[in-house]
Amino acid sequence: MIVTFAEHSLRFSLRFRPDGQVRRRSVTRRGACFDEHRGPGEVRHRFADGDGLLRAPHRLISADTADTAARVLERPLVRVGPRAEAALGELSRDARVTLVLSGLHQHVAAGADDRVNTDERGMCAVEAILEQGLAEAVPWDLTGSLTSALAAAERIVDRLRDRAARRRADTVPVRADVLLAPGRAGAFFHELVGHPMEADVLRSGVVYLRPGVRLAPEWLTVGDGAVRAAAGFRARIDDEGSACTEAVLVRRGVVATPMTDRATAGFDARLEPTGHGRRLDYRHPAIPRMTHTCALAEAPPEPPERDWIEPYGLRPETVNPSTGDFSFLALAPMLHRLDEPPLRLPRLRLAGNARTALAALRPADPTVGEDGRARRGCGKLGQFPLPVTFANAGMVLPAGTVSIEVAGP
Image (cartoon, rainbow, N blue to C red; front, side):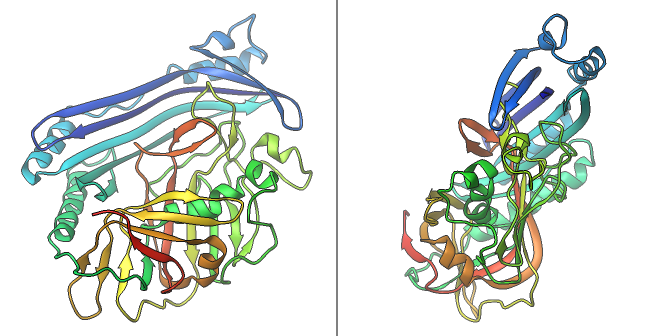
């Protein structure tokens, strides 16, 4: 079987500083590849810039399929307009805040055995940064209303300033509830549930998860797929041409379906490709990767009844997929108090074990929030940074579930 992939894509980032400086970065990819599947797990990868592989005598596919793929390479890419640049530069200077506009626009053709489909993908977000960890992001529509997009950016700047103005706590509670607020903890589920459920990782047999085993409360469901996101990463087909579906990684608390590409699905007759074959670009073979990971809480909310910590700027530090042991950094956490204004906390380290933490979760808010910043991404086998996005409902890690210690000023 020959899998064809062709792409014309642009990843860009514009950083607006309060002093008026603008730093621009962009990477354009235009080329194609063939993956020759010779047996379970055996794939020969060939690539070339431009349309070289799609022209005779190098092509391994029909002329019609090659023409479809070649046309993708000529499709135009979206650019940031001068009005948007000027507006973001003005907001950065007036608010004295750094703004980063980052995005991805991609045209692809992908498929196997002369059945190639095309797709157009795009995502864009603007991020406001006051200091390390003290940052907020919101989707930015390059083709929509500039007024609406700018108003959303102004709102996150206001939220940041409100948090920055809070008084610092005199002491740090080492035992407190930790609130994983909607749209704030996607990285938590991405690391602890997502990576172990990528089929090649799961098949290694060295991960702490096992299909059919209860992992979490019955109200928790975690899925991944490029079909659910409202403003995050979306796609109709993956980078092998398989239809994108949502793989339910944890169904009502029980470990369920892995994310597969064509190669890993070929190892087990019970599996089909779930549309998770992804590439950093055409120069890389496809491997099972996450797209948009979403954690749902289907239960009445049980919000914290005492002071709690909200770990803004949650980032993975260490994750052991074989044991489930983890540590995350909260770069700009807040201490919320029931009857008083919230306080700022120093950088914290939250450490524990995935089995214990996921089993102890309590539902806090069924509202699902999204998060995704196109300038960042996920790394696996040297393919970094691949755009991924997250979503989660609100949940609580009860006091004592994770250890809490100061990790910096």
